[in-house]
Length: 384
Ligand SMILES: *Cc1c(COP(=O)(O)O)cnc(C)c1O
Image (cartoon, rainbow, N blue to C red):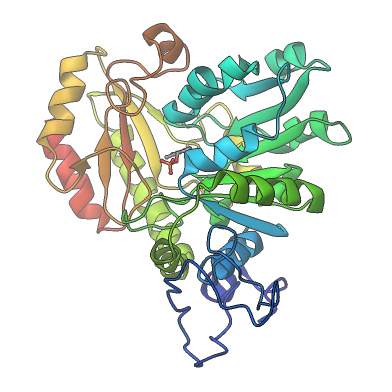
């Protein structure tokens, strides 16, 4: 089905998928095979070896490209494996400027893996462009943006950053994990690469670890496909099947994540123990206007701090919840609660993380698709 003119929900259901030509199977079969018969040497149906191509992976890669309004999609063994592939396009001496509030694992792969290969990582507060402008040089080859950021929900103006990279040899990569293509399309705003931890909202059911990249440029795609094949960080066919299945309800799930997020923010806003709420949908959010412009809705991620900023208070709240589950990760149908300073962001030095707002009492919610009333009652008793 040609899906490029269709609306998002229709694309979520249909993009990339054709009924199986061998059997007519509506659902993409799980092609659990490593290799494929050749009629003569090199004479095959486009599939020679499953590290390179697999017929359960191809439709998902095409679906992701379509949902992000890109041309080429690539899946990887995890979100970090996708970032790893982007970084491998760089050379020793190149510089990367990244937003200073980052997923902890992204910070870790930058600093502990790629720095020793001679790539330099600089960090900028990108709520405004001043720091970024002072760091860009002719060594800059990649600008890495996460928006909204994890876990303080800072919003970066993607189009504004793209003004600095368009027409240069600097690539702009955007980690679109929190917003999903349902709420935000960075390629339309001038980014060169969109990255996803598919593990989160795209998979949507906390049952698979996967990453993805989507690009428009053919040469960049070629380079990334070569890295996908050369380095081999791929998932098996069953994982691709699970995500193909998850994607079909992405638009429905996001609608509920967003609605529940709004209801919980309204509850927290009136709670006497809550100090500050990070949520791009609040008019008091410093980049609310940018969020309104570049996102269709504000998502299901919320973080907040407690009055007094005590570690013990935050730990007590995350222990007392019943409907929310204390766990790392996010973006599944079930609501999760986390404590970034000691969980997802423990690999970032204390003074670094506090600079970007990851203080001791910060609590992060991944609001699921349950009934909002049950979620609010649960938070109410946990905060009491
Ligand atoms: C989880 C996450 C990643 C890493 O993805 P994995 O699939 O866990 O490797 C990267 N960025 C963000 C924003 C994430 O939430």
